[in-house]
Image 1: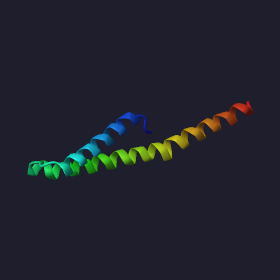
Image 2 (image 1 turned 180 degrees about the horizontal axis):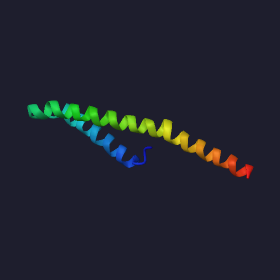
Image 3 (image 1 turned 135 degrees about the vertical axis):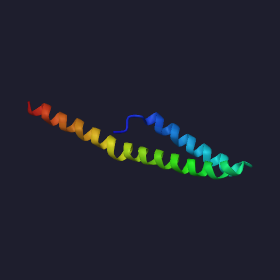
Image 4 (image 1 turned 30 degrees about the vertical axis):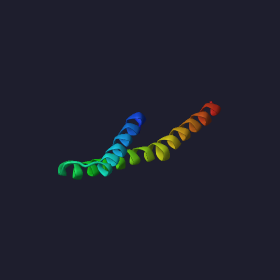
Length: 75
């Protein structure tokens, strides 16, 4: 499912950085509106990906390993 965990962290860092820059700087009008939108998209993407990794991928892998152990004991 999610195999690019470093990519998700990188996207999260970019989103947080864009949010910080947009709130702390005197920017042109275009960037004043573009950076918050970009940061919301990046932060939502990274948060969703990380949640899928933690709550779906890891338990699924653990259940698969447990199931393989049971089948190995039956043989």
